[in-house]
Structures are given as C-alpha cells and as structure tokens.
Amino acid sequence: MTLTEEFTHKYVAILRCRTWGEWPEWNRFFLPAYEEPLPLPDGRRLLLSIHVATYAKRDRPEATPAKPLVKAGPIVWRGRMETGYWMGMQYLKAPEDELPLSLHYEEPYEGEIDIQLHIGLTHSASPEDLALVASPICISVLALINLTAGEFLVPVAPLQVRALADHGSQLSDAVVIAVQRRPEIVMDSVKEAIERFVRLRSGLDRDSAQAVTVAARRYVTSQTEMDPIDRYCDLWECCEFATLFVKASGGKVGRVAQALTSHWNQTSDRSGRCRARVGHQAPVRRSRKNRARGLDAPGELAARTDLLEDVAAELLRHSLGVPFSSKGRVFDRLSSLAPNKPLQPTGFAGG
Image (tube, rainbow, N blue to C red):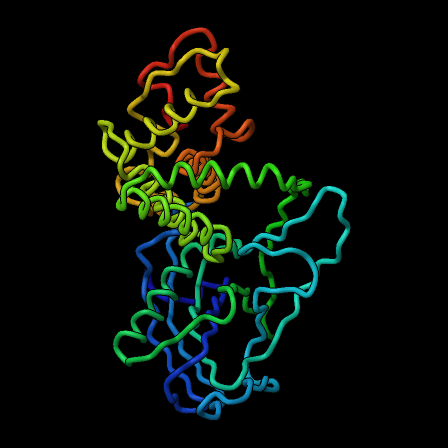
C-alpha cells in the first residue's frame, strides 16, 4: 500500500494536551505516512501520518489560568457541558427528562499542544471506528514524549476525529445518551448495606481487603473513563481483583465462574431455585488471554464492554456483601440456563 491519489477520504484525530515543559511556540512537524498494522473493524488497512503542533507559550509558573487563543488551531470539545449529568463519555438522562444537548467547542489555550493523526482511506469510515485505531496510537505517542523528553503531557479533551475537506473540517463527536431510571434513595437501605460491608470487611485478612479495595477502585474509574479501551481494561482488572483469592481451576475465568456461582447460590431470595454447579467458563471467556482482549475485534468492543461491566458489577457486589442483582445480562443468563437442574460445566460459556 502506498500513499497515492486513491486515498481521497481524509481524516484527522486530535488529542489536545497541556504541557509542563517549555515547547517552541507556533511550531509543527509531521512524519511520512506509514501503513498501520491495526485495521479498522471491517478489516480495512489505513495510512497514517503523525503530526505534533504547538501553540503560544504559557507564563510560568502557572499562577494564573491559561488564556484561550484566537483562531490558533482546530477547535475541540473539552468533554463537558453546562447541563446534564456526565459519567465519562456518557450523558445520563432519566426517561422523563428533556434537556438540551449542545457541545461547546474551544480554541487551543496557552501552553497546549496537539498530537494529531492524519488518516487516509480509499472509502469513508465512521469517526467511532477511526477512534478505535487512533486512540491507542495517540496515547502511545503521548507516553513516548513524556518518557523521552521528561515531559508531563496531560490530555485536556477527549480524542476527536474529524473528516477533512477542501475548506476546513467536518465536526462529528460521539456522545452516548444513556437512559437510566432516577432512583429514590432510602437512607436505611444505604445504612444497612454499609453495615453489612463493615461486618464482611472486618473478617478479611490484609491481602483480601486490599484486593477488594482495588476492585472497587477499578470499577469506579471505569464509570468515569473517557477512553473505551481503558474502560474495558479497568473492568477486566475489577474482575481480576474481585476474584483474586477465589479457589477454582481454570485460571482467571474459572475464578470468575466460581464467584458468580457462589454469589448466585448464596442470594437469599433465590432459595426456591436449584443450586448451580460451578462451570469452567464465564461470560468473559473471550477475555481470558489478557485484560485487553477486546482489541482482537474492535467492532465488538462496545458489546463486550457492556457484558463485562455487568460481570464486574456482580463480582464486586459479591465482594462487598451485596445480594445478586435482580436484573441485567448476567441475571438473565443464569435465570434461563437450567430452571430444573444444576448448571452444567459449560453453562456460563459466553456467546
């Protein structure tokens, strides 16, 4: 594959970062295009060129806020809006809510740089598919700069992919609207759950208590993570640490299956159901080789992450002494597998 005129569909991915070091002002370099080994979800290969662009310096030390520049570079959405309830890249909305959804784009600020990935394709692609390829490359370049230059670059906006045209670029940023029921919180129920947690935690040894703490931390960070690959990895780490001391054969996936089965069988309001036998596979079986296994099929990353989130939530509920949820993908799967007999060893196999 060579960079020829047939690559008529052009895009740019932008990762805007604030800087700690002193960069030359208003500077730019780019590297020759190369063929990226990671394909799009549909298997197409693409040509990429990495660019780095700097803007005006910021006064040091940082005693005052950085100032926005005027017509200095591409405008970006910095990941927040004045209205709505945000969790990571999700915009939560109750079924009855009616709220305006508008994204505010901003110029570069003093002391910021862009890591840009210019993309060439023979046919058009969605920004979401391109972001699955662009995100790990831009993050890798950021890490490379920090390691080799002694920098501390920090992203100030989500990665954004635009279609390039003859006269500017076409803005298209993905926002996921998640419809969630707004619960009425009962203080006595919260107090009871925390009391149960204290009783459980006081009986743990030091290593087990630390593992549960890490699992809870990874679950919380997954809810606010803005990169889909990092979110997947957070959830997989939550599953790992929530089952770190579960005794089972079959490695990590065997531990997950054992923990889910124990959690299901110990839930008091399911006493009328048969007792399940542990399986050696679980709904996360395709993740067993490493925690970022979702990368082997980028087009399925969102669906796998949704399932993994449900699995991680049930494992964490088990670790924190919370009964099994009465809804969700894991509940539905276990409820329908074998209503009149114990589950077989393959019962938890992921689809």
